[in-house]
Image (cartoon, rainbow, N blue to C red; front, side):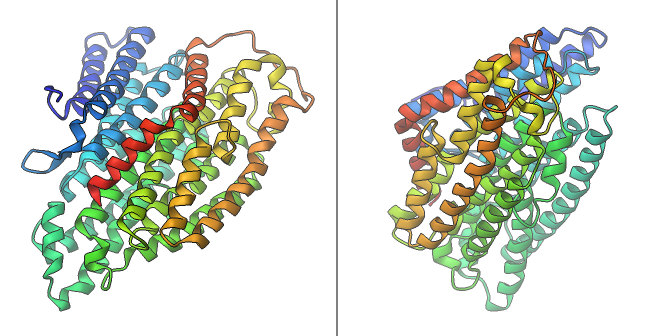
Length: 493
């Protein structure tokens, strides 16, 4: 058993943010991009490494509470902290080149570390108070990061839209939390779970309204319908590494908190007859994946296409909640674990795709499919990595996205939701069309203009290649990931 404090991964991210702030305070006018990126990378890397160590050592197989039960460390919290640490590492490595000439570099890395701390805490939140506080700790720095390019009108507009929609969803969510507290008298998840068993019939309606409003906050954080419309604009206007950060790490954290709150505080086998929240997610999952994929298919801007495809992937992961309670406990564990597997793989392949866009932006390449024509002739290694990301996101067996989708669809079928798996399979086939457009442009089409790739951004290259290697490597080493995810799902079911 590991003898370090159970919250060590979260402490590491918080310490990284404080060190970055302290360094920037002591030397505010220095432009030590390498030092700042090194500190942030070390923090992200140590967080991922310690989380993986804890998972491998079996620390999360028990449930360890801290701060009077407000936070909990188990297999699920460690699993999602590993995703956050890994994505954070990729993003800050790529940012070394991306923000080199920008002002306020210290603030940039500090905000990334603070947002990552909030996301890691979301996975460990065991009280509705810590759920809300950690969600806001992740959201507020993210708003600022989207608008980091202050001289870019699109970045500022995206940040404003993201902030306004986020503020509205937070208000709705906290009102829902207040209703839940009003009828149950507690904010701890296990306490709510006990209270709803003996709830007076007259209070069921208020509780249902509270759950519905709180779910709105989760749908916003995961960019699911109907709270998805901020995502395309925010992802398009944000610096490309930040687009990858909030579309991967933030989405994973949003799902982590949704899984824990709904399954521990409102177990469907207890309240299924009064608040059938799984059917809400059945409808939302089907609409989200369909709308996201059809919208992605008609985009001409590659970054915006990835944004809508991110909405589609949120729909796939929602199957993990929608199919709960439809079959045996083994089927529930499999489908929820499969959703977690997909989030881990998605963290690498989706972040890598956005970092490839950061690479193209660094070279001054435009954002349309046509602008990417012939890019493979100038940058074959990076283009090969982008090909891996695109086909893995589509579910082809060139990356671990194939296995994560296979387990997800198989889990839905085993739980009795074969028709939801069929909708997901059709959407996945559609996604192959628009992902292939990127591959066709960079490998087959003739360039429409001269592309100069004389400068070699080492950090972005390392991050893109690293994400591609992990995406492919997981295809051959998927067993540990699958086992960690299944164990994490079993903890909360």
